Structure formats: structure tokens, C-alpha cells
Image 1 (cartoon, helix red, strand yellow):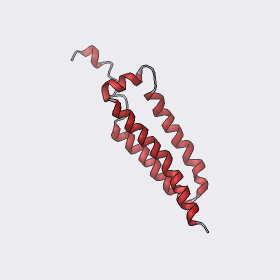
Image 2: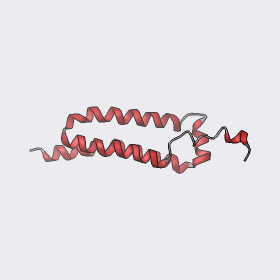
Image 3: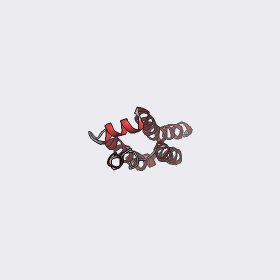
Image 4: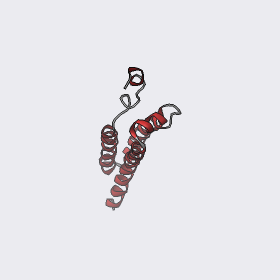
Length: 104
């Protein structure tokens, strides 16, 4: 591998799949627990989750960075990132639904 190609690697600047899963599961499980405690906390959790997902999606769909990520990490990086973001959005909603079912 020549040194010129090593300067343009993308995945050393992007979070690993483990970091992506950890971040979005942390936000999702935290949101689940907060929304089970108080329903109105969804208004706090949802914007944070959407902001983090938007930031990650902007990297994945950048016209220059996105194809480089696909080349270096493969398309499974995209698939797993989408699943992690969807869980982070779904878990607080599930917590809100569980809270509403518990109320009389």
C-alpha cells in the first residue's frame, strides 16, 4: 500500500460499527427508560435522537464520503447503521406506549 492512498482513508475518521451501535442503543434505551418514567420526556429524547441520526445520515449520504465508506466498510455498515438508528427512534416510542398502557 502506498503512502498516498493511506492519506485518503475514510473509515479511520468515521465511527466503527461498535461505536454506532453503542451510541444509538445508549440513546434508545435511555429514551425508553425516560419515556416509561414520564411521557413528556419524549419531547426531550426525540430531538436528540433525530439530531444524532441526522449527523450520521449526512455522513453516509455525502456524495464523496458515502461511496468511500461503502468501498472501505461495505454495504453492511449502512444496513447496520440504519437498524441502529431505527432502534434508537423506536425504543422511546415503545417506552411511551408501555407507560400509557400502565396508566388507568
